Length: 205
Image 1 (tube, rainbow, N blue to C red):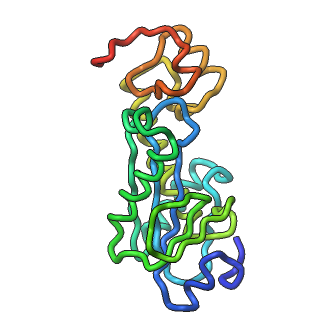
Image 2 (cartoon, rainbow, N blue to C red):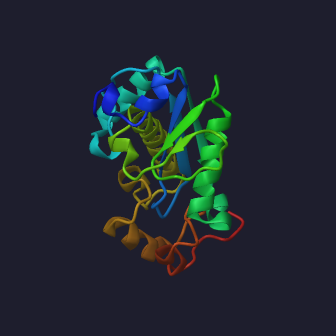
């Protein structure tokens, strides 16, 4: 991560603005919710990096550090039914708005990882923002850690799919389990590999 002058927040921080970094976890998964993190950091240098580049123990440690140093942090969740009803992008935007609404103090500018949230605030939304913004990286860490914990719990509720290992993403293990077990109630029915799997659960479960 660059120093203060090289990060995406630098221009906002130079104006004394509170900047919220926003990032998600779970957009491409076949099962489980989408989780969006929002984090406001004071101006400074931080060790936070894109959560996908970190080992699980590193993420857990850095998540604690984010919570310790942040001026505010929050999580927003879009449940599976909302993902199926709205589609991935709209569900992600909904989760982002939920996270942002919980920040106290509220942000005065936003940096997101290519997510065009509806806002009247100054917004930077470049691709790969989690590589150039400590606030976005911090948000990605909180979102990833929280979602991974949710998927471990879902693995206990719906054993056999391997949720604790692949976190709902489309691995060969997951696809093989779908063919045998069919979709669970926490699978996203809009996703083709899920829609094509034989049904085993009733819609009411």
